[in-house]
Length: 304
Image 1 (cartoon, rainbow, N blue to C red):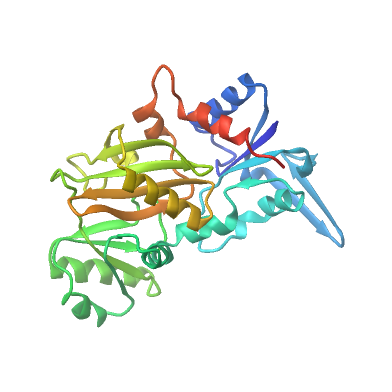
Image 2 (tube, rainbow, N blue to C red):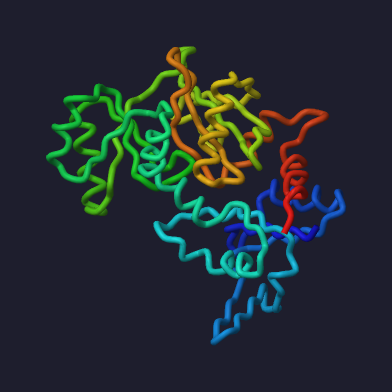
């Protein structure tokens, strides 16, 4: 197969080690693997005609059998997807599609969708005005988590322990951007009494790896990039079924599903369309299993 991996790596930087490893593993398995930096594409559009160039050289998008889309969407639009659209127009499967990514990236819409599925989610409220603070205080207790509706790697999550902190945090952000929409959520403790959550890596309708993340002493967030300890995890039947169900409803071929294991069952936090590879690989890699090999094998199953 001819596989393209599309990344958001800027021109001045090298690709992440796991992306380079994906290319190496793919080539070892007999595939042709090209790794792209999204910013190095040039697109010419005219009546009935488009031309795609990469690093100054024209390429034929239809030559590829599949595209692994590792773009990190940081804007509230899909403007970055003009190149992906060219691959799709040529009939090349794109994993994940822009539409499914935008669904997952909107945290509020994700919660609404999971709620409609009957999935147990972290209870959330939307704040758009200062007056809303007094309303949510009737239903929530401290500590609370504040998020904006877009974000990743825990970068948009804050914790507050009293009303003064809540109000001052919201006021500060509104002074920067008055149109910011906040989610207020319960701070959920896991059944082991620690700040832990689970990341489940789903691809092609199959759970291919899962890990438990425990936060460091310096941060309430259990993100690997923020120092969380990671270890392999075994899932219950209910947890597995719901992770697969959520991924399917969002239309994601690749997904990282996050939940907290509580005494009342799993409480789902969010779904990620571009789950990180470093943490899950570190937690689950053994002599007989490497998630990067599994990803390449799964890509090889897709047909144009």
